[in-house]
Length: 417
Image: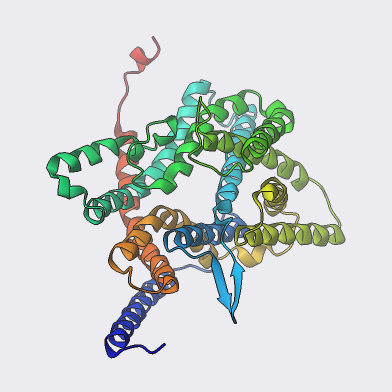
């Protein structure tokens, strides 16, 4: 089949456009690369930060495959199925969030015993923790959410119905704007990938006071039990625990999924903390490192594959074990990941996650004539560019919210009533 001159012209212009976008992205990356301090000591775990970025990319590729309708990689005439389980990166984020929540609770309990912090009523402690988490994500969510909503109003011709339809669309998006959609207030699905954040906040709000009150009982007994019970129930009844829109009659399945995996993460912290206090021989460190690497490689492979969903729980257990080992300090190679590049990749993961549908919808809405692989590359590039724009905007919003909150004065007398 031969291409006519007009088709060749369109293709050449498309390739030139992709080339210019890639060059522009390279200059942006080079500019920020020069600012990275490679000699700085970092508190975050470099292995986990790198994996944040890796799993963020697998999730974006998964959504690209569904939006651009491709599920196979063609190599030498051989069609290799892939990306059917690309959503699995969400399990990594749930478990790590539960791990960090457990670590925060344990640190506060320890500081209370040592008299380093004052004792505060549990409800206020929970609200403070949740506000810190909420502000940290909400600040970076505002720009991509508003931009995506405006794009959908244009691309989906919402404005054709007049100002009334536009105002109704915006009004219906208010619950989603504040991450309330998984309470059941889902009217517009502006940014559907934010179901994960909504479910996580609901689960954290339930679990934080319970784990704080019954830390050892929950992390060593109840947490693993609840996790396996919920995941087993979802797997047995529906064949998967990865259906975010399934309504169970009294809540979304994804909220129970979040409760299960955050509980698993909190229990993982307690196991990692216990392991970190052990004195191990060099050969034991090598064995644990091999287990860690195999677990993470298995998880990445599964998320990029099309294997059946019945293995979701198996892979989750291996991934959780690898997270335990990565945080324990008992595996080798940690220092290789403690550098500015890795920390920067971890930092940009959340803005990229929040901006992915903005990039995908721009490509679908204005560059739909391109081949599907070119659209995927462009979607990644646009996602990266919008993430870079989101970071300074989010930083300013976050600072403004925190400054306003810190400057607010309370009537201490009336608060004691």
